[in-house]
Length: 581
Image 1 (tube, rainbow, N blue to C red):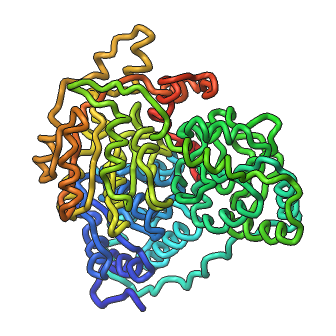
Image 2: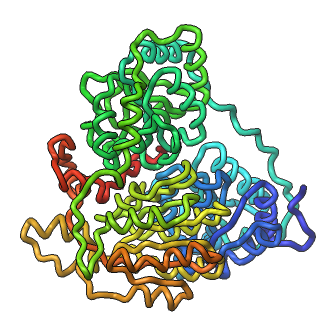
Image 3: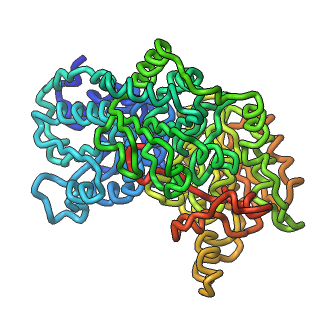
């Protein structure tokens, strides 16, 4: 269907063409520069979410795309609208989210406008793919090519739309006939046979599935069943094997003591669409030096980027797993069984962090963050999508809250920016009808992003925001304080976060003990259309993240005892330093 209408502007033709090509939702803050293209998208039936800040728009769109599997668009004004959104756009780009950003730009050659910045140069400096609509005649086809790149290459693409191009009369360009999406990459037969041979003889194989394998859960579970492998994920793929009795959850900093033990004990580690970066391997500590390491990735440059490998396989995770499974079916394993009844029972008993004993640090005035999160795990519906923020606390929402599947977890920490999880939860919640969105965020990140509560209220998102409130940037307090540095510059007076939330129209609770959580049950039993903010005044103690994030000096789990071991998950972000996985 042609996007052309007599008397229309190029901006309107671009919006209609993108709507027809499958943009699923558009998020943005509208100004004069992006008014017409956004109106055209909305007029063509694409739902529009007006956010209160451009960074919120970019992060919501990122989370919506990750969770839904579709492509969202972000619409921003020229200059300051784009720069306001850059942290969220950079997060999406580092995570290889399929996302299209429509950025108005000053008119061609206009360097005197207050809004002028060299947008392509700014984006290039951040490692973000950008395209520019170069003329009225070619604008529609350039927009569709940008969308095709975002979709087929799993990239975040910014399309700069100069005002003079947007305002020109639509010349009626129907756009290009784009080629179909390429077929999933097939591995070389010799690589398939080599991997199958390794799985035939491995005594203790472990799979680690990453973001690049989120579509391959069934194929990997089937191959693991045939090869006796245990199933782990990197943090961005958490939930991929939820419910599988041989799932050991997340490898890396988030790993429970049992998970770390089982990964470290592996004689064969196969990474599927996972970069095996310092977070997923704990700086290499979780991979035994004598273990054989295989990395499967669609990107031929990825294997071996972050850790040593013995075999790199270039291919789609699902296609490769199916091919290896077929090879093993023809010539089965010769190694003894790994999946014993005793091991299955041990995994069921010890793999979850909430089942690891700890000494409760709560008082009459402050609640232990572990006790808080375990209680909320029991209170909140199982059908949920969890979005943890970064900080000293973040291992609690990341690992003490169970998730139903890989769509139930959305981690926007590839850029390691705090303050994104509120918008992440809103975007992921909008992509998850019937689920409750849960943001786990510190008081610092909340105060950065609270304005988006208005967006959640207007759109009636079933949202619970858990604010782990220690009135500080806790990571800095616990890192620099023990070294004797004053920490006043990262500590703040008490803020009534519950009152702030009520001001936006949310329900709110102030929580100091587990008894204060009774209002959560009332919210769950109600219609859930009004977001709920929980201002949890928590006890504060240094997490294991401090050693990892600031010094990369990782402790050995086996040498930790008692409550020290139980504090390990207190905030490992486990996000990918490599943008694709």
